[in-house]
Image 1 (cartoon, helix red, strand yellow):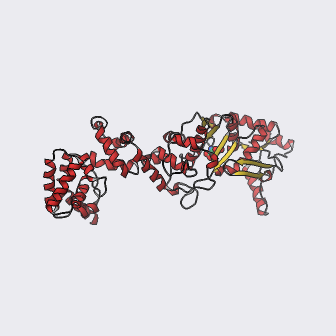
Image 2 (image 1 turned 135 degrees about the vertical axis):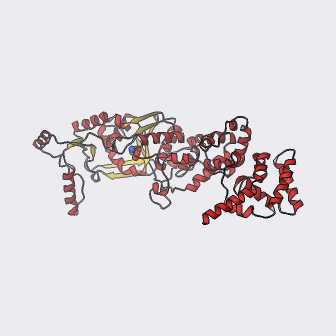
Length: 489
Ligand code: GLU
């Protein structure tokens, strides 16, 4: 095979959404697997709907996912002359023709045919236009489009790399517009001209483009150039089996970043919707995916968006990431939440990395990880009211906690095992279950009812902070009941 050259060609009329990101990913994997080139082309010829902001968002989204490109970004809006020149060349060769029809004229003719029960295709009026009529239109300065002359009675056939053989009869295709009367190219023209110019070998794109492919094949034939190979990826569906959209709570790829997902988890999620890199359900590295990637292995059926799979992949990845790396990953978020102190990556780096190693098992996203860190970094953290009511209102607690605090003060080392021994001994002496103290400490120290092993938590919290939080019992209870009152009132 000659050098593989593929492209991702988004129209910047919206965010980089999940479906487009998956198209980009499969192109990228294909290019990297074959040692080829991945090209980024921004299809911004629809001036009114395209925006700089969306282009920027697409570029940021690709960067965040780690999908680097070898060429581009090329902008179609910079290449208008080329499209116009190519369309005119087809007219000169008799493979396309000028069309002077006004939209309202076409509408009228179409409605008439349809009202008579007919099937409308552009009726080639301008192809058959008398020379004199043409001259008149030119003299009156009427704007003209360029239409492609679709060959008669031809069967267009191609071997889709995912769907297999596809055949279409040319009589079902009308003479489509290549260049609009304002000089703007249509998608078919610009995409084919660019794919030729950029020597694209494989066009990998969404299923929604299958019906466009025969038209584009006709254009390649008209230009006398061999076609790239085509592979159409099945569209992602929402849980209701309708095309995935904003309604399903999914928007830009960068939104996943905001919500604390790691790029590799999102990449795995996207890939695994239509393709399994291996036997196991797990997070695969980019290198593994590149090595194993093959278009033939992509399933033909439409995958269904399943956000819990993404959460699962993300939690797997977080729990496999060393605390030290997690520290770098959440630094920005901690800064935003005013939880960052420089000592966390200096004197206290070991402590903080260790803490992240402890907390990561219970964090499905980086947002959750930051929330789980909060009580270790600040005295301002929320309390679960139900947990307060359930675990902090035992009348024996004030006495028990003050004795336990004395025990803690006397410990030589404030380490998990000595803390545990002291707590169990105290519970035994007082004739209460250790769980009474454990639950109470968890709520007092963290505000929540679940956490990693409480003795590790205490060790990481440190003696001073632990004692200080234990002394807040009365305050926490009165604050909670006050809040409860406010809510009820
Ligand atoms: N701009 C088109 C889109 O975003 C590209 C289609 C193609 O890849 O040919 O759908």
